[in-house]
Length: 306
Image (cartoon, rainbow, N blue to C red; front, side, top):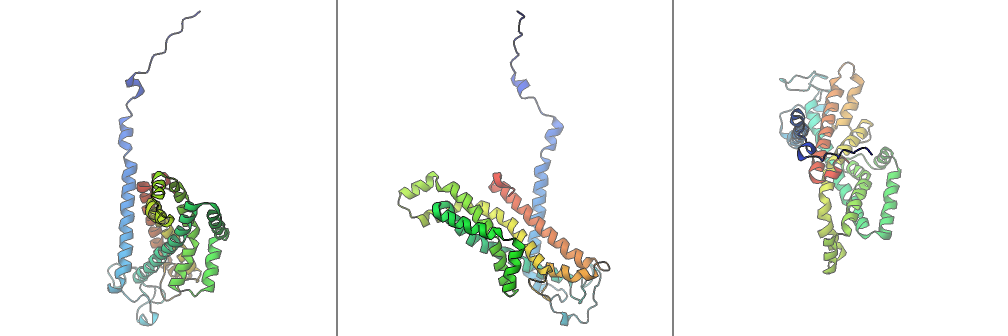
């Protein structure tokens, strides 16, 4: 019988061979790039928020009332050192001022819609996830019913029935995201409903409402908060789509969507009328998504990309 050579046991040095030094130097680049992207996204978001807050006090040209811009030339090209740094539109209204007033509308609609969706959907999801049983089944049927309608069709139906005012558009968009919050909160509440601290609180005589608010809710705030950044971006795009179709805030009140719609007729001659608001919309949505992913990586690593 042939001798079988014994296998050589792996030594510590061979089991943990040093990695390529060049590869080790390359590894930190992804976190650095992610951190740089998050910093840029945060800076842009802060800039947009501050601009929307202080636009009334800035020395900008008229951006909302065409009767006050009759003496201003229309479709002026961008000139950073002029009274209209980004030019004017077809009615002589200042584009930079319109972008900042449009940012105010977008932020109010996005944040307000998320608050409406989080309050209604979060309450439904919390009760359904904690109690289960028939409560969970009823809430699931309601959620599936809302999800059965295409989002854009549902939005158009709501804003057609209601007047296209800022509160009504915000309410319509908030209703659209109720199922998303319901499912997210329900899934997290189900995970915490059977945990030891909940059982301990129940054994000490705490009521269901107190357990849901004091024990379960604090543990689901972080994933809901990180997800909200992404939903704000979704609602900003949805409002811009409605404005583009003429179903949201009407002119002359500027929004990013109706600015794009108003400039499309002169797109070939003056592409900046469409390109500038579209680019601002793109950067804002990209920044909010980046902030949402950064918050997800920090607070809920397993669900950073929802």
